[in-house]
Length: 430
Ligand SMILES: *[C@@H]1O[C@H](CO)[C@@H](O)[C@H](O)[C@H]1NC(C)=O
Ligand SMILES: *[C@@H]1O[C@H](CO)[C@@H](O)[C@H](O)[C@H]1NC(C)=O
Image (cartoon, rainbow, N blue to C red):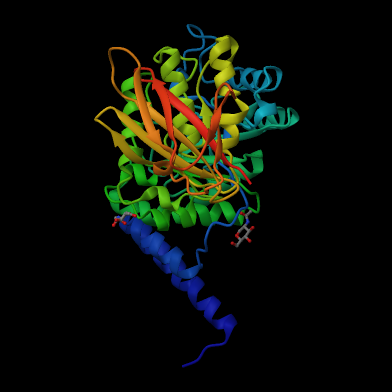
């Protein structure tokens, strides 16, 4: 029997209410999700955001879940922290070079939802509420991000969005949120592939463009990156960064291995996220800070600093604001750089195509040796992908120093410090 369109809608609504009812009594989350996906057509993410990797500041690595504002008045998760960081993004020049988002992470909420089931900010630490904070951040010409979790609780034990996805999307939109990081603690492995798309659907329905950061692939063993990129602007696929070289090195190795070729999925609107920038914190030497800035630029990574902007060492600030490194990260092609070669067992060779396509590229030699003296290397430009016979102008990215003019068959001779990099850019002549 053929039904008229109105009848079909009515039928599917009834059908959906039936399944919501069944899922409630059986607490079968999956049934609810399946039913919603069948009723509404969940379409691809098309919010026009993250055409280049997003840049900003995010509290998690540096400020974690500090809620004791008496003992830690400057470090606790509070409106004061985010307002001060917003002020500093502007006054210290970060905004001018592209850092735009001020992102709240876990532990901003009250332990319970309010009587109507809505999320509320902790009243002591956020006495004016999140809308007020968003207004403040917007008044500085910046954007505000927030954190939730797709499970029943956030990783820090605060109310999660499971069973409240629609309400929470609407709450965030009403507050003026510009970005959502949705974590994946406290849920079942089978739920991710349904839950994250459903949240994308509800975010879209609010009508407010919100950049969507998914922790989905970090929680599953063989992520379907092509599918994930359909629903998320950026996605975390590896463990949280910590304040150490070991942690940075582990992430670089994971991205170097590129299991399942996840680098290929990156492009405008969709980027792999190797996690925050810890430059200016406690764990990295200056060489290692250069390494993180170089590699995160090469990987077309979102650049979210997690550090104390009130006390940023000058040299660290100069790295974070290096315009040539940022331009490589923000290149409009959005191509993720990859590790293409090893020289011996300690020198990693990375390349990234930049505009104009096929004519210019960035490259990095990373020395993972943890002792001794700088390593001298000689490497033919053609092995980096240089093919134009007219040759290339090579510059060192951090300093902008001109290294020389090279033909594809010429070799580049550089010296790379232990746990450091040579970060270069080759521009086609002609
Ligand atoms: C919602 O999705 C539609 C279809 O993909 C898209 O055109 C629209 O811009 C999206 N709106 C928001 C707010 O993301
Ligand atoms: C990844 O790419 C390489 C080279 O482009 C190819 O040989 C390999 O089969 C690909 N692997 C997967 C899992 O797609």
